[in-house]
Length: 196
Image (cartoon, rainbow, N blue to C red; front, side, top):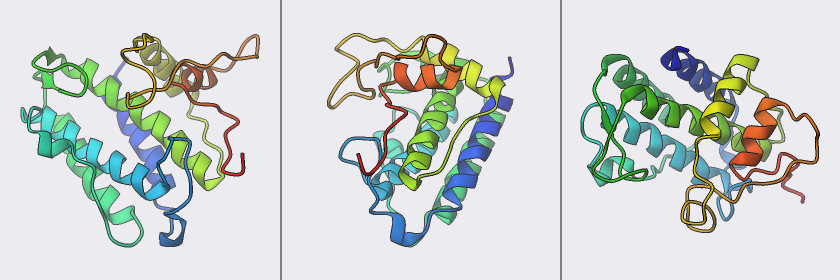
């Protein structure tokens, strides 16, 4: 499994979505509680810069992880952050420091990139859901995403209000698709709509 190549594919999928966002859509609700589309995108851009900083050995700089603001449609701000992230990931072999996950601990590069990979896929779904668009990653991305999602701790210290993820959701399907299982593991209701 080449997580860097898969991450590049995931980033490209989400870039296609971000390119479609218009300024008058930024107030749309999203599946992320209390976040409108502008807030979600500001968080995603901030995570791109944060992970880029971590790849460059600056992960403990809290300022690097802040959510970003942007003017107008988000495509340009997103593209700049994605370019910086891609270059940083391509150049690094060393461990990352990601205080949001575990403070003061070195995380192997491929593992850290897998964290951003799953974050990109799931926030890509959040973005698509807010826009009323379908989002189904290719099978290989979905399967690897599921493997990563299965490693996310499910205890109450990691889940719920104010945490990175919501509680795990039960699925009614007997054999759910890999990406549907990933969404449920990370607390996403794949039937979410703005109207609901």
